[in-house]
Amino acid sequence: MSKRIKYTKGPIGEVRIVEDFLPPPSELVLKEEVEKVTISLSKRSVDFFKGEAKRNGTQYQRMIRALLDRYAQLNAPPNKRMQRGGQA
Image (cartoon, rainbow, N blue to C red; front, side):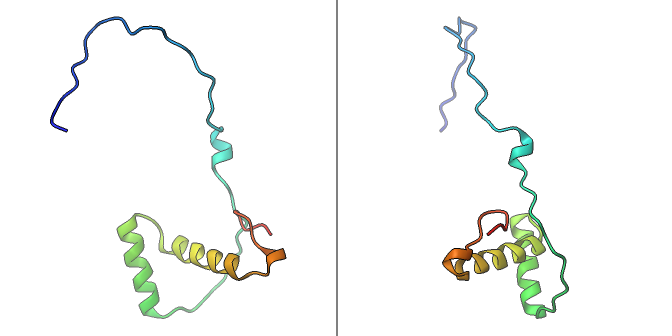
């Protein structure tokens, strides 16, 4: 990786404009329906998630929610499997 590419001021060649294939930002942000609850967790569990969240640059509540969502998805009856976004 020590070789450097040397760019010159030569002709670029044939240029072709391509159609935008990315979805608009509004379609990338999926708002999930959430319900606020109060839950008592062991200090050990909270400390674990806080540490992991800090190492991964995220929020520990988001990690716990993702874990619970995944657990519910894997253990729901086949006709009640949740899709992404929490919808059955």
